[in-house]
Length: 137
Ligand SMILES: [Zn+2]
Ligand SMILES: [Zn+2]
Image (cartoon, rainbow, N blue to C red):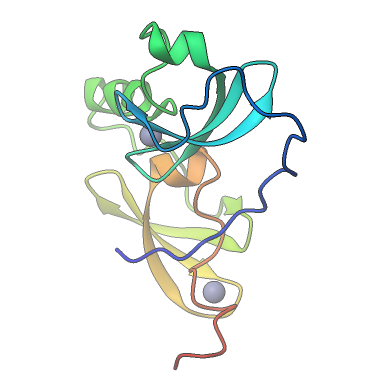
């Protein structure tokens, strides 16, 4: 799926980090941006973001944005759909369960899009990703 959602990022921290790990990867997390006080904004392999202190990531306490735990919980309850129809996440409203943790959602722009419950829950999917794109179709 080609998601093109760009959540607003917090402003830059004006002071340089003690240790610059920008672009380095620990587990599923890649350091994106320094946030101050040894805290970084990280991008998870799943596409999510998390803000965490460098030492918790380096020490292995924080390995992902939380998606692994979410997946583990959902796998342990395979019959759980995690969400109900009609729940609203940003511009998306869940319409029907597509199986395998995926929900078919209706975006406010009218498009249908299939999104995993995890991305919805974690706030990573808030629109179909195409409704703000006026350059394409
Ligand atoms: Zn993740
Ligand atoms: Zn849309």
